[in-house]
Length: 360
Image (cartoon, rainbow, N blue to C red):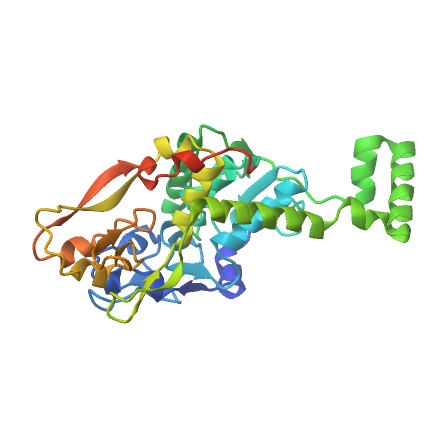
């Protein structure tokens, strides 16, 4: 095996997104620091966003798997989802593995995605892929996790937990395989599939297709992209999300801002794709005691996502559970003790009537 840690140090960089961190808003979250296997994440003070120690960081991406406030210089969870979706649309099994399982000189097949650590995939992304019936296979030797120098000790624990959650939520299965498909030449693939005489006939037809232009119609990426864009448009219409800034005459700045974090968006999309997910998922969101609330809107001022806002129509406290991530900042901000955290099922999002299974 080679020194994967040394290669990753220059291949990518983990980036923090302070606007998606809840600590500056008054929450006491430390999940990223607790999950980091090499103690590379720290906080200068109680109200600061995380800081990454570049010398310690192994670029494993575990922090990306536990919090949206982290991304990498090479990809993010949304781009990873789009990539895996494209592989599935080619009619292939989506294989995932880590760099520890790739040896020098070995070239994985095109349907194999190599990650620094599988723990960089959050449960919501696994769930969305399964909800859309994308065939997933994890191809790796689990023994390599025991002495992995990229994500020592915690990598396997975290990615198996994320996969278990997704399988529980969707009722669907992620396959395992100890062998990683190797890249083959087109001639080898044709020989394996058809035999020698049929293979040469297939290659001849492919050549004629390229010359005549018919091939572009057979495997048109543009056509596939059009269908995928249409599906995503239908998805957004069903979710009825209002992201960004909204004109609000009752708000201090004359507008209200809402941010849908990527992991929550993926969970909502999973529910639309597979309605049974909403009964299987439990999550923590905030709740308000109407009798104790005095409507001073202190909770609105600290809400990082805009789940708590002032109603543009009435000026009263408004709450959208789809945006609430249960960070607890509103609980700490309420002097009257009117806000608490409660555990509910995803049915509270009110997507039951919108759920369907056609988006696969």
